[in-house]
Length: 352
Ligand code: SF4
Image (tube, rainbow, N blue to C red; front, side, top):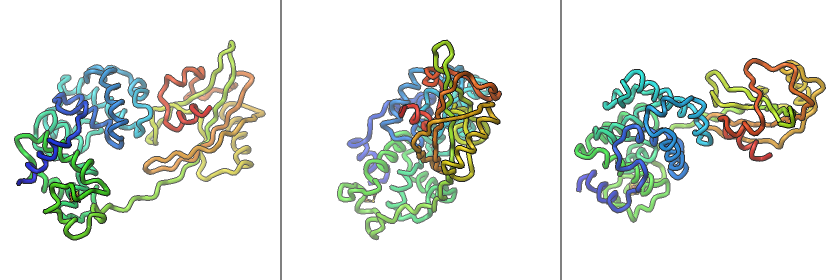
């Protein structure tokens, strides 16, 4: 039986039913694909439904503010995905006459859309024969055909794409891709049950005892450590508690999200150093003196390329600080719940 037929038979029995399956609306397919990058399906499903409800069309998404989009995205991480989503929606409205691009190349021009996402949208929405290649597909295909090229490299992508282009079902590339993704995710798992696999009789990795060795992964760079000291300054005005937040800028992580004023250091500070640095920072930044604070327990926050070591310095002030830097914003502590913040800040707020 041909590869695609075998895959299709398996998909008939074991394929997943998902809210973005069986539809051909490119906007919703795009939304689901962006949400599902680096996100588990169970978690992504809720976010997808929330986004579709808040922004049923690409025009609705484009008309929203970036802050609204980031707020809805909160908790998913990798916030550049949300910013790109918003920018691409505006691009579609302004540059494409409100019509979603319908070619692979046109889809690739959208901000935040790479080859994988473009292939998914092109095949699911427009039935164009572009194979999807994600981590699960790499695993399955590398084992089945015994390919030892380190995955997630440009060379590997081209090699796997060329191979799958010969296998793809050109009449139903949408179904072929959905089956390929599900097979890699549900059957050819990191620890697969090969006795239940319809490809067992032809799988090179199984025959040569290399199931545990494939796919070959390129070595990862060690995450960089960073030390964040946040200033949670609170005071009351007319009986209402207020605090200060600032919006992250530049090309760094969490751009566009809000945080408490931050002192970042190149190395970890011991308590004595921290008290000295905090005093200097509070004096220079807010004209606060003297400055006493309560120190939170440490928060460790792991991102793909960064390990954040965070401490929160909470101070009860008698009144609003004398100096408010331009980038800071005064909010009530109740309002923080309605502005987009990183998962780290959210974890701290939840801990209070
Ligand atoms: S036999 Fe095992 S390793 Fe090979 S494709 Fe099937 S599940 Fe994957």
